[in-house]
Image 1 (tube, rainbow, N blue to C red):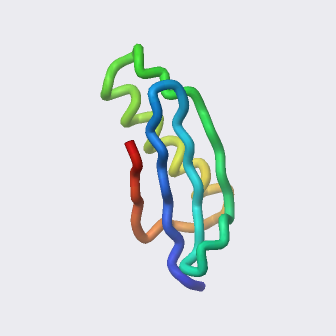
Image 2 (image 1 turned 180 degrees about the vertical axis):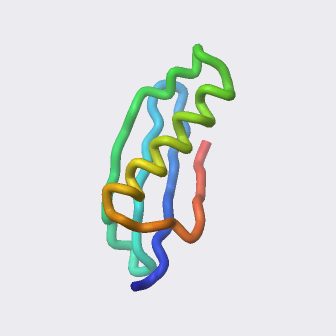
Length: 69
């Protein structure tokens, strides 16, 4: 299997995440509220949970993560 990559868009109100293969094909994607009012540690935990949940749903381990802020 080719490498799988995670992409995260950290927005003021929403976190968006997608998993894609080397060919750019989107394997899974999901959005959740950022909940930035809970502080930066909470937001980092939400990002980690979002990536882990998506990876688990496809039984993959991302080789790398890119983030847009």
